[in-house]
Structure formats: structure tokens, C-alpha cells
Amino acid sequence: MSIFDILGPVMVGPSSSHTAGAVRMGQMTRRLLGGEPESAEILLSGSFALTGEGHGTPRAILAGLMGMDPDDERIPQSFELAGEHGIKFSFGTVNLRDAHPNSALIRAKREGRDVEVGASSPGGGRIRVFSLDGLPTSFSGEVPTLIVRCEDRPGHVSRVTGAVAAQGINMSKLQVERDTRGGTALMVIECDQRIPYKVKVAISAIEGIYNVTRLNPGEESK
Image (tube, rainbow, N blue to C red; front, top):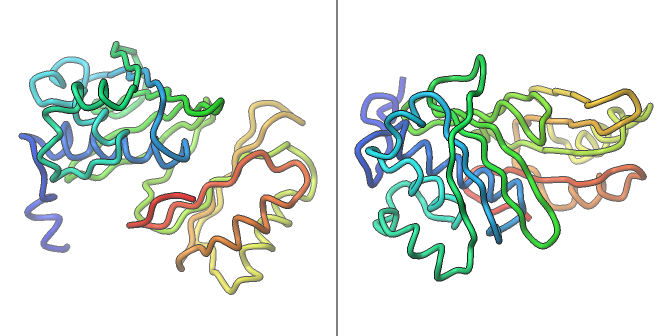
């Protein structure tokens, strides 16, 4: 157990789960989208829907979408700042069955690209993504992680993991999901070392790859 587990994150707001975790959910969506969204629809579930307003959860998620950290003093002004940034946003509620009580579904768009992220905030400022673009998954972004969207075709898993291994990177966990046979597949690869940009370049060059996102802790995605 670390001192972080005992004290929780440095943050602005009353709750590590409803505020700090909510900021990180917005940050994660921003990273998966590849930058600040032009529009966002934020749907709160469970405890987030019932008590999130009082804890500042909507403002916290929106702040994260703009790249703010949990200790940013501008979080309470995120609605106004989003307006200044030209971000169109809306809020609502949703019933996410079997999800953690502190959960949200975030739909964001940017430059013709869109992403739908289902994430929960179990406490201590930590988060877990449980769905991405409608496909089930499970990752936190606390370790170097590759997110690969591609065609569901034979050989893709071996070619993608081969590109990672070629850089001397050890893979600790691999998840593969698909919507339909021969449709769209989602690969989530958690690694022991930082993932360099050239890995993204190598994977992106594989035929049938739609999108590659690198999640290195403490870095913006690119």
C-alpha cells in the first residue's frame, strides 16, 4: 500500500471518486479521441446520476475533457470555459447495468472522429474503462497501454504484437474483442515499458488498421 492509497489524490472537489476520478474519466476520453472535443454528451449512471451534481461530477468530467488535472482550480468554472473553447456539451442519465455505481458514458466528437467511452470511478481518483465504442474492455491507463481498432481478420493479432515485441517491449496483458465476425475488432495491450511513437507508426502501417492510440502515463496521446 502506498501513501496515495491512504491519502488519496491532490484535487479540487469534495470526493476522490465523484470529482478526481470524474476528471480522469474526461481526460481518458480526450486521450482516446486524440485531443479536445468539439462536442460531448455526458451520461451519468448510478451514484453519479443521483449525487454527482452536488459533488461537481459534470463539471469535473468536462474539465478533464479540456485537459485539466484533478488539482486544477478552474474545475468549478469548466462550463464557462467550455463555452469559451467553443465546445458544445450536454448532460443526461443512463442505466448502465452491471456497472460500478460511479459510472458514466461519454460520447465525444472531434474533426470527424467520434468515441464512446464507458468508465467507472471506484475510488481514490482511479478509473477503469469498461467499454469503448460499444465493445467491452477493461483497462485503467495506469500502465503503458496500446488501443488498436482494426478489421477482424486473421493474422492481425500476431502482426500487432510482433510490432510491439520488435521494440523490446514486454506485454503484460492482451484483450481482443469484436462486434461481429469479420467486422471491427478492438485490441487492448498493456505493457511493462513506455510505448514509443514508432510502435504506433509501425502498427498504423498494417493493412486493415483503423486507429492506434498510445496511453503512456503522464503523456498526452499522439
